Each structure stands twice: as C-alpha cells, then as structure tokens.
Image 1 (cartoon, each protein chain N blue to C red):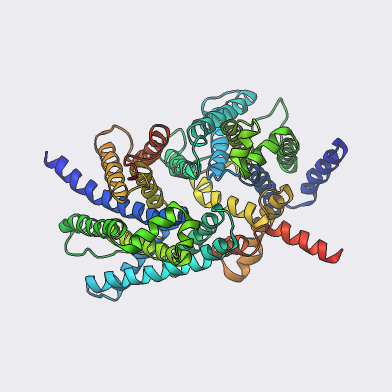
Image 2: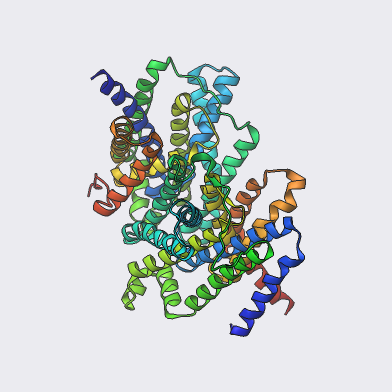
Length: 307
Length: 281
C-alpha cells in the first residue's frame, strides 16, 4: 500500500473517536488493540505456523513493564519504552531459542507454561507488581512536554495499530515473509532452499512478541490499571480463536476475526448473559471442522458466486 | 525424617496423578500423533462426575467410580467423533485436530462453569483422608500395569503400536485406523477422568482445575518420553518430587512452585528431548 493510503487510514481512524462518547471511545480503543494483537498473532501462527500461547502474556509484559519502569523506577518515558521492548525481546528469546529447535508442539507447551508462570509472577510479585490487585492510580506522564488524553490518546493507539500493520505487511511481502511461509508449509524443503529454519522461527516469534509488548504498553494507559486476570490464558485462547475464525494466514482474516469475536459479546450479552465464551469454543470447533479458511474464506466464496 | 516421609507420600500420590494424565496424552499421541490439551478438562469432568454421583447422589464409591469411567469413555469417543474424525478423514494436517480440541477444551470448561456455581465442589475420599494417597498410588499402578500389558501382550495393543509406527502400512495390514483412533480417545478420556476423580478430594472439583493438570501431565510426559508407558509414571513422580521439595525447602513464595514444570520442561527440551526412557527397538 502507498503512503497516501496509510495516511488516509490514519486520519479516518484517528478522527473517529472525536465523534464517539466516552463509553464507545473505550470500546473502540480496545477493539483497535485486539486487532493489533490479532495481526501480530496471525503473523506468528497463521504465517509462520508457530502455535504459541504466550502472545497475550507478552502484551502483559509490555503493560506491566511500562508502568513499573515509569512509576516505580522513575525512568524517563523514552527509556521506559525502550526497556519494556528489551524485556519482551529477552523473554521471547529465552523461550524461543530452546523450543524452536525441536519439532512438534514443544513451543505450544512451553508458552502455555510461560503464560501460567507469568500470572503467578504477577500475583506473587508483592509491591513490584501489586499482587492480585495489580497496579492502578497512575496517569500517562507528559510525553515530550505534551499531555495526551481522551480521543487524542486513541490517536496514539491508532498509530500503534497502523505501525504494526505496516510493519507486518511489508515483512509479509518481503523475503522474510516468504521464508516464514516456507518454514510453515515444509521445514525440510525450506532448509534445502537455504533458509535457516530455526533462526526464521526465532525471529518471527521474538518480533511478534515485541509487537504484542508494544500494544500492551499502549493498553496500560487505556484503563489506567493493570491486573493479573486480564493477561491470563483466557485471552490467549481468545486471540487464537480470533485468528482461526477470521481465517489464519490472512491479514484481513485477523482483522475480521478480531472485530467479530470482540464485538460478538456486546450483541450476545442481552440474549445469553456472560456465556459467550461457550459460543467462542463452538465457533472455533465449527471453523476448523467446517470452514478451515475462516470468515475471510467464506467472503471469498461469496464473492466468487456473485461474480 | 517424619516431615520428609509425609512429603514423600504426598509427592508419590500427586506423581501418580501427573503420571495418569501423561498416560492419557500418551494413549492418544502414540497412534495418532495428536496432542490433546483437553485432557486436563477431561480430568475436570471426572472430578465433577465424582461430585455429582458421590457427593450429591451419595452412590457407593466403587459404583460411582465405575460410572465416571464409563461416562468418560463415552465423552472421549464423542470428542473424537466431533473434533478429530472429520479432520482425519479429510486428510487435514495434524495441527487441525489439535486446535479443534483446544476449542473443545473451552466448550467442556464453559459447560461445567454454566452448570455448576464457581465455588470449589467437595468430592469424598475413597476410604479416609489418610488412605487417599495409598489409594491413588494403588489405582495408578493398576492402570499402568493394565496399559503395559495392553501394549506389550495383546493383539489390540500391537495394532496401536503398528499404527504408531506406520499408519499406511498398518491400514494395508487390515487394521481399522478409525477404530484405533476412537479407542485411543475413549481410553485417554477414561484415564484422565480417573485422574481427576482421584485428585478431586484433595483439591475439590473446580472448573479451572484442568489447564494446570494438562501442563503438569505434559511435562511428566516430556520428562519420561512418549516411547514407553512406564516413562509417563516415572516422569510424573520426578516432577511431583521436584515440585514438593521446592515448595518445602526452597526459600521462595509457594506460588512459584508452579514454575517448576516450566523449568523442567525447558531443561528436558534442551538436554534430552526424547525423555528419560527411550523406546524399545
């Protein structure tokens, strides 16, 4: 996509919150963050073929680290962001280096355990992580002398989303994206073509984990509170469901899946209360068994029939 | 010394639970290559079966236990029918049923969380509190002996092995692949449900008990190796002892013992990815 289109997308998405009330602005911000997460997870799972459950934990690492670095270690803003990214990269490397060298689903398991351990660390972290209650009562400090709040902050989230999208889009259309798809489809053939399979996997995992961390940093100032239940495995599963229901391996699929599953509870809750997670599970099974290409595949089929 | 003996008994009991969960994984991985993370949820279903039959309906223990195992056989068979067979028949990659089973995991958990209130539900001991550990160990040993005999001494067990070695060749030799798959899921669910029923008196039936068990069971499997049935038990025992020793003697907050499986997993993946016991050639 050209720069003009990205600029138009930014203006439209960033202008929208000025016409929304407080409540819908909040919903809109969370929708944008879910879409950013789903895009990153789609690159990891759909395009690189790595089954990991740690994506949401890295979102949490980002959110917690920015709050801790800013308000407990009193680091300047730019340094706190940098330190948060470095932390995400370090944790991602620690998980990815040993597990991606092995075949099978060891990464899935290691990241499942990492997700559980992250929640334990948050709960047991004492004053540093705030324990069960998490951290609250902080406000985004002035960034380079500017106070950002309300719909303006939504603009920050829009830039995080579009930055994620642009980066992943370019990567997907580069040598690296093709290497990732080759590794997903046939690691032996990819290796025979001169692709370093383990390194490709490690880079994809680390990069998408750092992107999740970045989205988490933006999230930390959405509710102005971070607490353990948000970053649990529930949401890690939901992210996987979003990508699969939307159509794994396609950027548009990730966007549609994230928007669909994020907005579904708002539609369903008047009908069935808080039982929408059961619907998510059923949709997940139905998608894999009946429609493996997801909603985006359904859309393709529809368009083909009309044409 | 008294202290250590108590620890050893309780570690042996939880080691047997992990071993049973690992065996449930193994029963399905061996013939199909499918890692079913929903085993933890099956264990949870077993625990709630115990609550329903033994606590609420006050059935005698052996009858309730038999009913739970029978019901779990059906659950496992139904799971295979819904989330595995259509994909295997379509020739989908092995990741597809694994993901579909993750969906089933959520479906099981949500059905239970809708049907029961979120408090822990008590499940009675088989005899008395002090005998529960011995009972767990005895049942686990029986199940492992049966699984070992099945794989090593029966024709049906050999068909599992044949399918594990080479699916196509096994099919050409007249082995019914879909029957082996269905059987492995039914047996896996029964073993997992039994583990849940056995552990439930100590931890109470709770709808969130599944995932930790699934992680501990898989870690036990990685430690022991998928090649041999005994490996699952050995891995479970090693993991449980490591956990309990850490909890008792290491100067860290008790919650961090949940990190022990992760640590073990990482070490074994790095140093010995085939597990402690190698498959017999």
